[in-house]
Length: 244
Image 1 (spheres, rainbow, N blue to C red):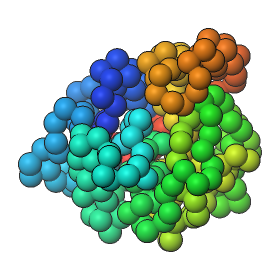
Image 2: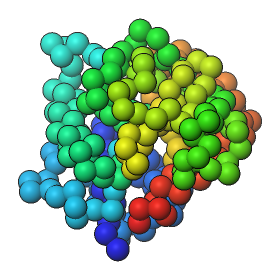
Image 3: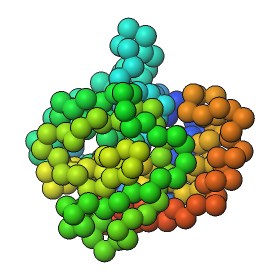
Protein backbone atom coordinates (compact mmCIF):
# COMPACT_ATOMS: atom_id res chain seq x y z
CA UNK A 1 0.00 0.00 0.00
CA UNK A 2 1.37 3.38 -0.99
CA UNK A 3 1.21 6.10 1.69
CA UNK A 4 -0.83 9.27 1.42
CA UNK A 5 1.05 12.55 1.35
CA UNK A 6 -0.46 14.96 3.89
CA UNK A 7 0.61 18.58 3.44
CA UNK A 8 -0.13 20.92 6.33
CA UNK A 9 0.26 24.67 6.59
CA UNK A 10 -0.95 25.69 10.04
CA UNK A 11 1.85 27.51 11.93
CA UNK A 12 0.12 26.83 15.25
CA UNK A 13 1.42 23.44 16.40
CA UNK A 14 -1.72 22.63 18.38
CA UNK A 15 -3.96 23.30 15.37
CA UNK A 16 -1.67 21.39 13.02
CA UNK A 17 -1.47 18.37 15.31
CA UNK A 18 -5.24 18.39 15.82
CA UNK A 19 -5.85 18.53 12.07
CA UNK A 20 -3.41 15.68 11.48
CA UNK A 21 -5.07 13.53 14.15
CA UNK A 22 -8.45 14.27 12.57
CA UNK A 23 -7.24 13.24 9.10
CA UNK A 24 -6.02 9.94 10.54
CA UNK A 25 -9.09 9.21 12.66
CA UNK A 26 -11.79 10.37 10.24
CA UNK A 27 -10.06 9.06 7.13
CA UNK A 28 -9.31 5.66 8.60
CA UNK A 29 -5.60 6.19 8.11
CA UNK A 30 -2.69 4.76 10.03
CA UNK A 31 0.32 6.96 10.78
CA UNK A 32 2.53 4.26 9.27
CA UNK A 33 0.81 4.77 5.91
CA UNK A 34 1.11 8.53 5.59
CA UNK A 35 3.94 10.96 4.93
CA UNK A 36 3.25 14.14 6.87
CA UNK A 37 4.96 17.36 5.81
CA UNK A 38 4.39 20.50 7.90
CA UNK A 39 5.16 23.12 5.27
CA UNK A 40 5.32 25.94 7.80
CA UNK A 41 8.42 24.27 9.28
CA UNK A 42 10.00 22.58 6.27
CA UNK A 43 9.89 22.84 2.48
CA UNK A 44 8.77 20.04 0.22
CA UNK A 45 11.32 17.21 0.33
CA UNK A 46 13.85 17.28 -2.48
CA UNK A 47 13.16 14.67 -5.11
CA UNK A 48 9.54 14.15 -4.03
CA UNK A 49 7.75 11.91 -6.55
CA UNK A 50 3.98 11.92 -6.64
CA UNK A 51 3.92 8.39 -8.07
CA UNK A 52 5.20 7.18 -4.70
CA UNK A 53 1.89 8.16 -3.05
CA UNK A 54 -1.67 6.91 -3.12
CA UNK A 55 -2.86 10.50 -3.09
CA UNK A 56 -2.31 13.99 -1.73
CA UNK A 57 -4.31 15.61 1.07
CA UNK A 58 -3.89 19.34 1.73
CA UNK A 59 -5.12 20.81 5.01
CA UNK A 60 -6.38 24.28 5.83
CA UNK A 61 -4.69 27.26 7.38
CA UNK A 62 -4.92 30.97 8.13
CA UNK A 63 -3.19 32.12 4.94
CA UNK A 64 -5.03 33.59 1.92
CA UNK A 65 -3.84 33.36 -1.66
CA UNK A 66 -5.40 36.75 -2.40
CA UNK A 67 -3.39 38.63 0.24
CA UNK A 68 -1.08 41.32 -1.13
CA UNK A 69 2.23 39.65 -2.10
CA UNK A 70 4.09 42.76 -0.89
CA UNK A 71 2.87 42.26 2.67
CA UNK A 72 2.28 38.50 2.73
CA UNK A 73 4.13 36.60 5.45
CA UNK A 74 7.24 35.03 3.84
CA UNK A 75 6.44 31.59 5.28
CA UNK A 76 2.90 31.72 3.87
CA UNK A 77 4.31 32.79 0.50
CA UNK A 78 6.70 29.82 0.47
CA UNK A 79 3.94 27.39 1.48
CA UNK A 80 1.75 28.71 -1.32
CA UNK A 81 4.55 28.35 -3.87
CA UNK A 82 5.41 24.84 -2.70
CA UNK A 83 1.86 23.53 -3.06
CA UNK A 84 1.28 25.32 -6.36
CA UNK A 85 4.46 23.72 -7.70
CA UNK A 86 2.77 20.31 -7.43
CA UNK A 87 -0.49 21.27 -9.12
CA UNK A 88 0.61 21.07 -12.78
CA UNK A 89 1.56 17.41 -12.37
CA UNK A 90 -1.46 16.64 -10.17
CA UNK A 91 -3.93 18.00 -12.71
CA UNK A 92 -2.07 16.71 -15.78
CA UNK A 93 -1.78 13.17 -14.43
CA UNK A 94 -5.08 13.23 -12.52
CA UNK A 95 -3.30 12.33 -9.28
CA UNK A 96 -5.77 11.69 -6.43
CA UNK A 97 -5.98 14.96 -4.50
CA UNK A 98 -8.17 16.25 -1.69
CA UNK A 99 -7.71 19.93 -0.97
CA UNK A 100 -9.56 21.02 2.17
CA UNK A 101 -10.55 24.70 2.48
CA UNK A 102 -7.22 26.30 1.50
CA UNK A 103 -6.93 23.53 -1.08
CA UNK A 104 -9.91 24.70 -3.13
CA UNK A 105 -8.22 28.07 -3.49
CA UNK A 106 -5.00 26.37 -4.57
CA UNK A 107 -6.79 24.30 -7.21
CA UNK A 108 -8.86 27.24 -8.41
CA UNK A 109 -5.86 29.56 -8.62
CA UNK A 110 -3.85 26.97 -10.54
CA UNK A 111 -6.71 26.62 -13.03
CA UNK A 112 -6.89 30.38 -13.55
CA UNK A 113 -10.00 31.12 -11.47
CA UNK A 114 -10.50 34.27 -9.41
CA UNK A 115 -9.79 33.42 -5.76
CA UNK A 116 -10.56 36.48 -3.66
CA UNK A 117 -12.41 38.02 -0.74
CA UNK A 118 -14.85 39.77 -3.07
CA UNK A 119 -17.73 37.37 -2.36
CA UNK A 120 -18.61 34.09 -0.66
CA UNK A 121 -16.60 34.29 2.55
CA UNK A 122 -18.35 32.38 5.35
CA UNK A 123 -18.32 32.85 9.12
CA UNK A 124 -17.08 30.09 11.40
CA UNK A 125 -19.72 27.44 12.01
CA UNK A 126 -21.97 24.96 10.22
CA UNK A 127 -23.49 25.56 6.80
CA UNK A 128 -25.93 23.45 4.80
CA UNK A 129 -24.43 21.97 1.64
CA UNK A 130 -26.57 20.67 -1.23
CA UNK A 131 -25.54 17.94 -3.63
CA UNK A 132 -25.74 19.02 -7.28
CA UNK A 133 -27.01 16.77 -10.06
CA UNK A 134 -23.42 15.99 -11.04
CA UNK A 135 -22.54 15.42 -7.41
CA UNK A 136 -25.16 12.73 -6.99
CA UNK A 137 -23.24 10.59 -9.49
CA UNK A 138 -19.81 11.18 -7.96
CA UNK A 139 -18.32 8.17 -6.13
CA UNK A 140 -17.48 10.25 -3.07
CA UNK A 141 -21.05 11.55 -2.74
CA UNK A 142 -23.34 8.89 -4.24
CA UNK A 143 -25.93 7.74 -1.76
CA UNK A 144 -25.29 10.52 0.75
CA UNK A 145 -28.14 12.83 1.83
CA UNK A 146 -29.15 15.48 -0.72
CA UNK A 147 -28.33 18.13 1.90
CA UNK A 148 -26.13 18.01 4.99
CA UNK A 149 -24.23 20.35 7.28
CA UNK A 150 -20.48 20.92 7.23
CA UNK A 151 -18.10 23.15 9.16
CA UNK A 152 -16.68 26.21 7.40
CA UNK A 153 -14.84 29.41 8.18
CA UNK A 154 -12.98 31.29 5.44
CA UNK A 155 -12.25 34.81 4.26
CA UNK A 156 -11.68 34.14 0.56
CA UNK A 157 -13.34 31.83 -1.95
CA UNK A 158 -13.38 30.74 -5.57
CA UNK A 159 -15.57 33.32 -7.34
CA UNK A 160 -16.54 31.19 -10.33
CA UNK A 161 -16.36 27.52 -11.23
CA UNK A 162 -12.76 26.92 -12.37
CA UNK A 163 -12.30 25.90 -15.97
CA UNK A 164 -12.67 22.16 -16.50
CA UNK A 165 -14.18 21.51 -13.06
CA UNK A 166 -17.36 19.68 -12.14
CA UNK A 167 -19.57 21.37 -9.51
CA UNK A 168 -20.45 18.82 -6.80
CA UNK A 169 -21.72 20.70 -3.72
CA UNK A 170 -23.17 24.17 -3.12
CA UNK A 171 -24.40 26.25 -0.20
CA UNK A 172 -26.41 29.47 -0.10
CA UNK A 173 -23.56 31.67 1.21
CA UNK A 174 -20.87 30.04 -0.97
CA UNK A 175 -21.84 28.29 -4.22
CA UNK A 176 -18.67 26.25 -4.62
CA UNK A 177 -18.40 23.94 -1.62
CA UNK A 178 -16.93 20.98 -3.50
CA UNK A 179 -15.54 20.62 -7.00
CA UNK A 180 -13.71 17.97 -9.02
CA UNK A 181 -11.18 18.31 -11.82
CA UNK A 182 -10.70 15.27 -14.03
CA UNK A 183 -11.76 12.12 -12.23
CA UNK A 184 -9.58 12.21 -9.13
CA UNK A 185 -8.72 15.81 -8.17
CA UNK A 186 -11.12 17.05 -5.48
CA UNK A 187 -11.35 20.18 -3.37
CA UNK A 188 -13.77 21.27 -0.66
CA UNK A 189 -14.42 24.69 0.85
CA UNK A 190 -15.56 23.00 4.07
CA UNK A 191 -13.44 20.88 6.39
CA UNK A 192 -14.30 17.18 5.81
CA UNK A 193 -12.12 16.07 8.72
CA UNK A 194 -13.77 18.33 11.30
CA UNK A 195 -16.32 17.45 13.94
CA UNK A 196 -17.52 19.73 16.75
CA UNK A 197 -14.56 18.88 18.97
CA UNK A 198 -12.05 19.68 16.23
CA UNK A 199 -13.77 22.99 15.50
CA UNK A 200 -13.93 23.89 19.17
CA UNK A 201 -10.15 23.57 19.35
CA UNK A 202 -9.70 25.72 16.25
CA UNK A 203 -12.07 28.39 17.51
CA UNK A 204 -10.00 28.69 20.67
CA UNK A 205 -6.72 28.75 18.76
CA UNK A 206 -7.85 31.24 16.08
CA UNK A 207 -10.02 33.51 18.22
CA UNK A 208 -7.71 36.47 17.53
CA UNK A 209 -7.10 35.77 13.82
CA UNK A 210 -9.93 37.91 12.45
CA UNK A 211 -12.43 35.16 11.63
CA UNK A 212 -14.84 36.38 14.33
CA UNK A 213 -14.98 38.76 17.29
CA UNK A 214 -13.04 37.16 20.17
CA UNK A 215 -15.98 37.50 22.55
CA UNK A 216 -18.09 35.35 20.20
CA UNK A 217 -15.90 32.26 20.70
CA UNK A 218 -17.96 30.59 23.42
CA UNK A 219 -21.22 31.07 21.51
CA UNK A 220 -19.64 29.64 18.35
CA UNK A 221 -18.39 26.61 20.26
CA UNK A 222 -21.86 26.03 21.69
CA UNK A 223 -23.37 26.34 18.20
CA UNK A 224 -20.92 23.80 16.78
CA UNK A 225 -21.72 21.24 19.47
CA UNK A 226 -25.44 21.75 18.87
CA UNK A 227 -25.04 21.05 15.15
CA UNK A 228 -25.44 17.74 13.35
CA UNK A 229 -22.23 17.53 11.31
CA UNK A 230 -21.60 13.87 10.54
CA UNK A 231 -21.68 13.41 6.75
CA UNK A 232 -18.50 15.29 5.69
CA UNK A 233 -16.18 12.78 7.36
CA UNK A 234 -17.71 10.08 5.15
CA UNK A 235 -16.44 12.00 2.11
CA UNK A 236 -12.91 11.92 3.49
CA UNK A 237 -13.24 8.26 4.42
CA UNK A 238 -14.43 7.41 0.88
CA UNK A 239 -11.52 9.31 -0.66
CA UNK A 240 -9.03 7.34 1.41
CA UNK A 241 -10.79 4.02 0.74
CA UNK A 242 -11.06 4.68 -2.99
CA UNK A 243 -7.42 5.56 -3.55
CA UNK A 244 -5.69 3.72 -0.75
